[in-house]
Length: 420
Image 1 (tube, rainbow, N blue to C red):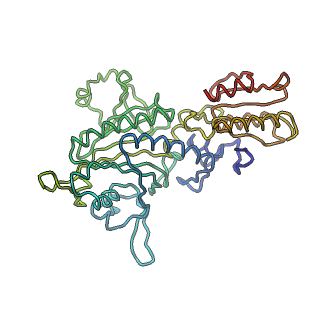
Image 2: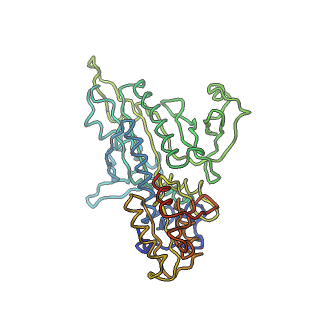
Image 3: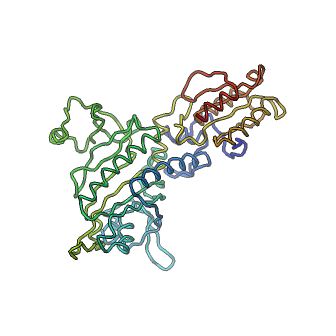
């Protein structure tokens, strides 16, 4: 893509009404636009990143048997009354409205009731189980305060998978697969070294749930990490009994602030029983379906990557989710310059090989401004074409975003490095 095709512009200054690093950098670099507190539009660069994250999550969910669908954002009052979660006394962050015919509806703040209501139409026998539907969806929560950028919004995008199993044994088998899939997601988006499976409260139907917490000073949670075992415990469940059960020495724990980037829960019959979501066993007995819940905030994960992997110059995207692989910067005053022409040739060759390139084809922009914008935008590989690099042939200056050193390489060497 030519950079002049982007209608977005970079900014040198942080927005005055943002305190979170992720929002500051994403707004300055042109990835998001703030509509109001806790509400952001995703701009073209941000959308490309979000689509990369979605692709990774989708692959991991499909690997463990997930099947994608799409649930509606508008939710029926009658469905949610079955679990008493329509009541403002129980859930105080609904967005609700009234249709012209007087019908009350709400905008999804989670999906348990929606899936239970849908699956009741399709599950009646043990032969129908297990099932693992999931979707990507905009979720709405009427938060009192929203000060963490896209990590805690009033409107955000997430993935939710729900498991429908015949019994706890079948559920537990899938639950273990989900742990692995979630760990794979965080490794693939560049957060593997910072993210811990964390024991948390399991609620009514299990002793523990499992959160995935990424260590960051921007975190809202306190976790205690056993680095040798590679696991953590949320402060809310940290007791001597838990430590003994998990065979952890207290002395070995390190306290850290962390961002919750995903969670998995055993729900048991909490949402199947109110909907009479049952199935017939081989003996013909009607028993309730055993459920589980598995969530990842897509925009929250995007913001967490920025919080954890940025530096003083800007964002540092992992290659797996970067909007482009290469940022191509010709240095010259106009489109007739040799550097511009050779950059155009290189752009054509790289894109023909399937390499995603953002070509900074802006003219009359100083080199320092181009370099600063490139660092802010955070694309993994920077390639500079200039009169100096071309004086002895077809050479470019190549630099990784997370490296302090650049080197001169030929066009051929560059293509080999980028396609290896």
